[in-house]
Length: 462
Image 1: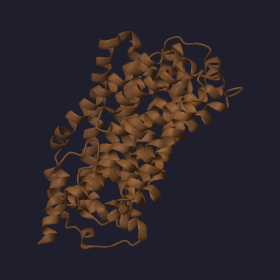
Image 2: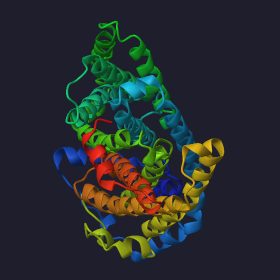
Image 3: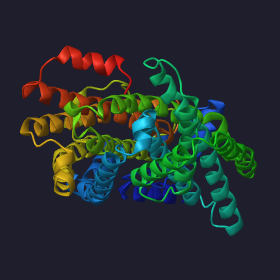
Image 4: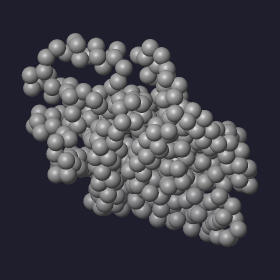
């Protein structure tokens, strides 16, 4: 009887939208144990009756999935559009003009906040679905320990993001200005710390605003040489306190041991996208780079997070961690099966692809209404931009299918291990393809001296 009720709860959880984070699924609680001891339990869920899968397919039609996704997609896109307008405004501030590496920090810090939001939602939803937070005292302990882990991760990864930004920019610089290095590191740590405290707020808007305000404050007081190191060390010194709080919940402590690699690697990948942004944002050939970067990166990241979470839930329903269903045995499936079959995950992939062009056209139009001079009005560019957005999402959706299968085969939770990688890759792909769109538009509309432009982008400090 309990097994029937559990399966029913999982089926109900699958029909709920998981747009910007994982939906509650109590079976995720088994994943940490499976990954820790390496044991891979095999159950009858691997040999699912095809008729059961067909029934599930009929429940999740393209129209139902579209209605689930549409409103969160549009709301998130509006936030991304405003974030782009803010970034376009902030780039003219003196601190961004002087401390160029601050622009490199934008994608990794924004991505870090999003990854922390999604992983925190996954852990709390699992606790809720297993009844662990029914007791008030237990609820407070679980929530406080999870938030403490988030603060540890935000503080340390924020510092690492600043160091990665410096490392990527050091090749093209004659020497480091240690005053600006201190401003960069302190701004990154405090931005990550405060953004993690505001996990329920609009991510990109909050993160960009905090970074701009904090960095401007410390840049104005850069002559007080001890201020930035003192503040940075002070925030880092809070880490033992957060670890002490996290220790109140032993299972959460496993995250501090094994949960770093996805977030750090995602930060490194996003940093390369930030490097491209910092090198192109001030060039007249790339007019509009600042305002469109958050949009193309955020839309791709949101859509691939939706698909990853849906595939993960599908596996939680029909399989056991460590064992793939028969129809998902191939790690590198045929792309036609991913986008053109009648399976429910293929249907959701087509729905998400269908949203790309209309969504970007809406966001592009809104940006032009608010600040039309911030973007080019070239029809060629708009066409190139839409093609680039489609290419980005197609690649991400295919990689989502591949990575979820590989992760599940290793008895790891795809929500926690795949989403950071894919959103970081979405930042890199989005920034690279957007820069390529501006470059092709410039060439097709009479641009000249391509060799000189490429030389400037590669060798001259941003």
